[in-house]
Length: 108
Image (cartoon, rainbow, N blue to C red; front, top):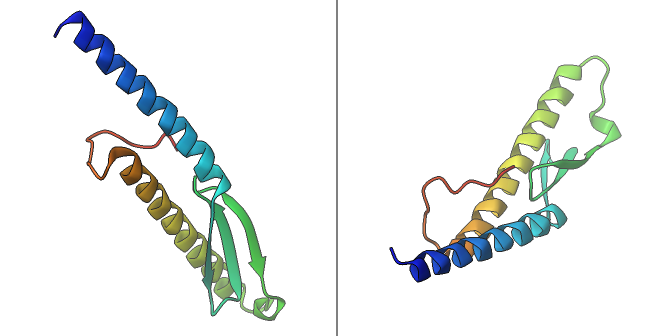
């Protein structure tokens, strides 16, 4: 590979890195919402899969059935993380033009 070709490739890599950083900042601002138990437990996560908030309807709080509440929370959190991962995949697909690049994983 010629010097010019290598330099051009390095510029492209730097542009992609800059776009990845922009995408990460955007993902941090975007949110997804998931719920369980007919909306009794709601979870909001950002596009980086960080849980932002959990809302629990007081009607689902039963001191004699804590296990059900725990299950609803786990289900809603898992659904929110799934939605966040879908959002990440959409963003990566937009960045790569739909090409699947082996080893291209988000650092979060």
